[in-house]
Image (cartoon, rainbow, N blue to C red):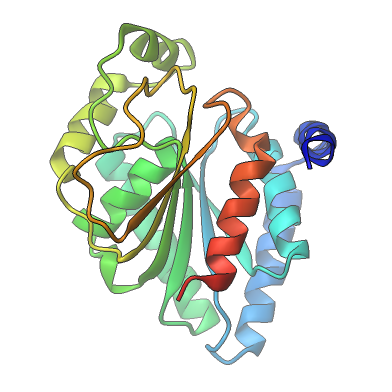
Length: 234
C-alpha cells in the first residue's frame, strides 16, 4: 500500500503541471450532465478549492481520481484573497446554480484546509445545512490556530490567519451536519498539535493520517478515506 501511495503521489504531482482550468471545467460539465441524466437520483459531491496559481492543476488529479472511482464530483473555486464570509456566499451561489442545473436536492462537500473552513461557514452561516448530506473536512481547524509557526506558514503562502481565526471562532460550536468526517494530519505544522479535537459532537468522525498540510492535495491516504466515507456512510 505504501508503494502504491508513493506512486500515486507523484502521479498527482504530474497532473498539477498539466492540469488547467479548461480541463477541470470539462470534468465538472461531464459529471453534471451525468447527474442530470439521473433525474435527481444521483449523488453529487462538491470539491472546494482556491483559485491560486497552482490550484486548478492540483484539483485536476483529484477530480479525475474520484470520477474514475464512480463519484460524481465537481469543483468550486473561491478567491483566496476574499474574506471567509464572502467566499462562503460565493460558494452558495455556485452550489445553488449547480443544484438547479442538475435537479438534485442534496450534495456532499469535500473541503481541504481553508476549503473546509469555508464549507463549514457555508453550512452554518449561509444555510447550507439544508442541502449538505455528507461533509468531509481535510486538515481544517475547529479552533483558532495560535502557534507562531502555523501563523508564519499561513502568511508565507499568502494566507490571512487572523481572518481565518475570526471565522473559526464564529462557528466553533456549530456542527449542523450529522454525517461529518474530519481528516487530520498527525504532524500538521500549520494547525499545530490540536488534533484530535476534544469536545466535538460524537457523530463527527475524526481520522488521522501521516503528514500534514505539506503536499496536501496529493495525500492518497486522505482521499481513500474520503472515498470510503462517501460510498458507505448513510
